[in-house]
Length: 310
Image (tube, rainbow, N blue to C red; front, side, top):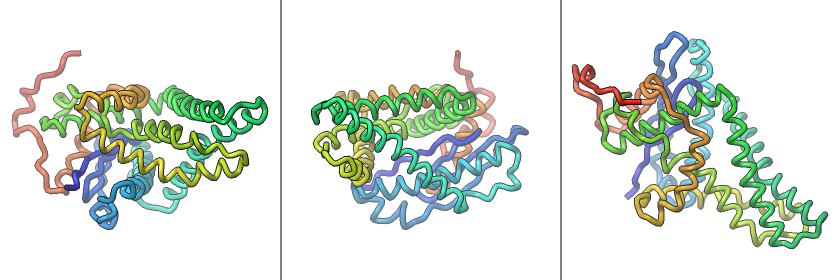
């Protein structure tokens, strides 16, 4: 059985949701209107045998999700600035160029830099291979957490993190069978086991373990080993994320997913009801495209909705 999990990401003043057949991004314009853009997802990726093969499916889906997320982010920026007439959907070579540059930056910062620092310190201070491995892993973890703390200081990023919380609350509410109104969705958690933040933390931790025996004396060989194993690390991390979601209520699995949920405290914030409304608008067409029933309130029942206490 190929169990499908719905998800998405926060964008500028909005949320992008992804299903099996379509992706939708909803953004609130400066005038207060919610604009929704939908696009079909490639069948060769999302509904092919590649999407069901363990380890390989993670690489295929993650690569497409990177491009999709970047294009949605660029489109949302145009709409949020009141330039929806110029927004061209989720297309354009600039988006893929942005993905490539972002990947190069992330690989250089979180993989190559810690390895280079550990190798230099090892040769300078005469550290043992095991001490060098600990230094490399510790530095990589500190860089990851420090980067999240640093970007969270930006007011613009804090709003994105609020929409990130809105995305999580909406998915949590849908998976619980809740009626999708902002007031009801607001009761749910801003944390989710399938969050990209948890995935990245798994990538960092798995890379630490995997790189321990690969402390080569030649610096370029050590760097090359990290580059070659990045797809392996990402594939394993994706499978761990799926397993942790399926068995999240098991007491041992709760210990495994706790660090990721804790780190999500850096990348999510409590959203407003207006933000939750945007997230619901993004999820609804995705569910409809997959032929699923959208748990919306009956006509005329909105006035009876209780407002949650602060």
